Amino acid sequence: MSEENSQAAAPEMAELQDNAGGAGGDINLDMLLDVNVSLAIELGRSEMSIRDLLRLNQGSVVNLDRMAGEALDVLVNGTLVARGEIVVVKEKFGVKLTEVVSPEERVRRLN
Image (cartoon, rainbow, N blue to C red; front, side, top):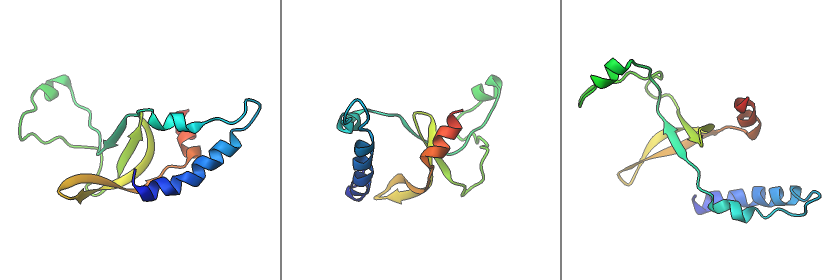
């Protein structure tokens, strides 16, 4: 996380700590900051038979369910949290977030 993003997240973390006060006292969210999660960037999906899968080789083209230029999905532990676009940064690929899914929408998608 960039310094700018961590500074922007700091007020939200403080608010969470303030709101977590209930009967059990303050919850220290610092211990959660080191928990590893699985981050996946999804370009698209495709379904195929095992026969077709076994026929794939170098140079094969797999058609995806998205159009070129359409936003990528950013998933954390399998849950959609954002959408973005591919960028190149110092000769490496990256993802620029263009939309962050609201917490309410994430909870709605769980059902």
